[in-house]
Amino acid sequence: MNAANSALLGCFIPCHGCIDNAIHSSAGLQLRDECAALMRAQGHEEPNGRAKLTRGYNLPAKHVIHTVGPIVRGPSPTARDRADLAACYRSCLGLAAEWGLRSVAFCCISTGEFRFPRREAARIAVSTVRDVLGAGSSSVERVVFNVFKDDDLAIYRDLLG
Image (cartoon, rainbow, N blue to C red; front, side):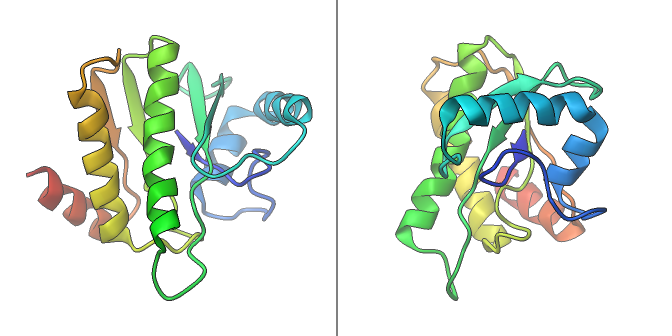
């Protein structure tokens, strides 16, 4: 899963440490070409909370699911920010089920450059994933919450027991 920007074309800051840059750099130029074709066909930027699926190209994954999380612009997330973040997880899992995927790895959507508080984002992620998988209509059997920072690891361990 890629926490993307609304252009879906990868990070535009060379050598930036974000997941979007890491995925696009590792996947190869074919990923950017496929994303560009998707965006041309769509005709507008990708809104928050939706998801698009592409091939994984040079990644060890067959597919990449791209989603755009909310950017927190004030001192704390708004109700809309929270709803958009939950929609990211629902959309990704829905798309994974649509394609018959059995596993999904999520990064910490919106918690880096987009400034969503990490603990609150993790609570939304875990509860949304539990709700979707608990409904029993998904092909997804395994969800990985992939974290970047030790603080995130501690938060997810706490939330997942």
